[in-house]
Structure formats: C-alpha cells, structure tokens
Length: 176
Image (cartoon, rainbow, N blue to C red; front, side, top):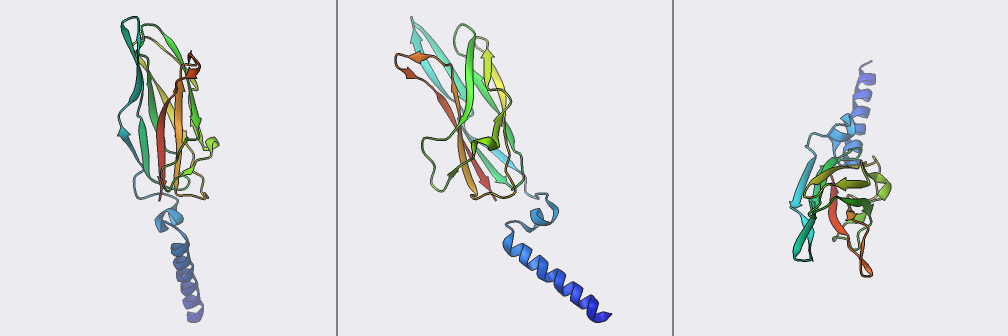
C-alpha cells in the first residue's frame, strides 16, 4: 500500500514538472485563470487630419492612435474602447474596419482578422462629437506567435482627388 501511495505521488510530481516545462505559466495551465492582470495601455493619444475648406479647418481624429495589450494569456478576450471624432460642421458617416498592417514591428506577426471584432463597422457621428466603438479580441488557447499586431482603419468613404484617406490605429498584443 505504501509503494502504491509513493508511486501515485511520484507520478503526480512528474506530471506537474512536465506541465511546468511545456506551459508558459503553470498557474494559468492548472487553473485556467491568470494571476497577472491583463493590461491595456494607450501608448499614443490620438491621430487625425486637419483639412482647410473655405477658411474653416476640420479636425477628424481617432483615439487611441496606438494600443498595447500586455500580459494577455491564451484563452483571454481583451476589449478596449476606440473613439472616432467628427471635427466637421455637419454629421459624417465613418467606416471602421480591422486590417492587416502595411508593415510590422520587429518580432510581431499578423493577427488573423477573424480573431478581432468591432461592435459597429459604421457609425454616424454628429458634428463636433465622437462615438465609441468596442474592439474585442479572441486569443485562442493554441497560437503560433506570442506577439500579434493589427490595425483599426477609419475612413469617411470619400475620395480627395484620386486618394482615399484612412486613419489607422496600431494595436499590439503581447501574450505571455
């Protein structure tokens, strides 16, 4: 009986040891709950355009311009609020989408776009006001990279000459 008990304890300790080696976070592996708080940091305030139209300046902007989500763990669903401001003198419709970045920061990979969702893809913003859009990210339990990146793109759908203007916010997800 004593040998059986020692064998069970030894097997348990070996399993815990291998779980620790193959898991990034033993606490997260055993309980499924993270002991470190998920941190969403705004690294840059806002980015916008200033356009002159008949002596009047219009300032549309998005905020935050850059977001870094730290201490994310596999299986987490971080969310944050994204704002779109209409600086013109009339209501404007904005189109919001998730897109692959034109360039990546060193060490980052593209996030699969189906992992990111917006609660609204189109917003009508009254003059001089802003609207909030919730951005949600699903981080699966198994993923190939620990540093993921995507952009949130906002445009009013109008062309200036032959060019369409987009404001883009950079979102970086760091998984522990």
